[in-house]
Image (tube, rainbow, N blue to C red; front, top):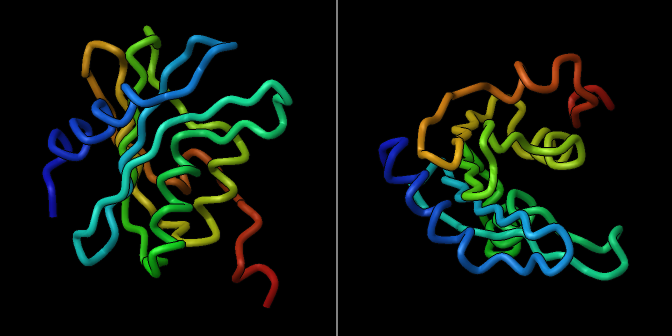
Amino acid sequence: MLTNEQLLQKAMEAAKFAHVPYSKFHVGAAVECKDGTVFTGCNIENSSYGATCCAERTAMLKAVSEGHKDLARVAIYSPDSEGYAMPCGICRQFMTEFNYDMELIIAKANGEYKVWSLKQLLPEAFTPESLL
């Protein structure tokens, strides 16, 4: 298991690959699975804005497409954000599919970070368990 700082460093590296010709807002994410495997992602914009994919979902999609559905935590970083680079609502909902107890390590551009649980950021979420 990586330290929070090590996982954030991977998110910082991933942000460098962001494709952001419209917003100019780079975001990187690093998802750590329960077995310690890490997948990174960046945001990838599209001229048809709805086709844009956030960094968090890019990293999670990579993990799941490689057979890892046991997501434990995610680090999120943007060098362009004075505040914390909070995940959007779609990403928060997407995370609940894999671990509603997920830990989120969210940083400011200066590297200062806080840790939240997904439940704190999306209380009373629509989860797979709520379908049962």
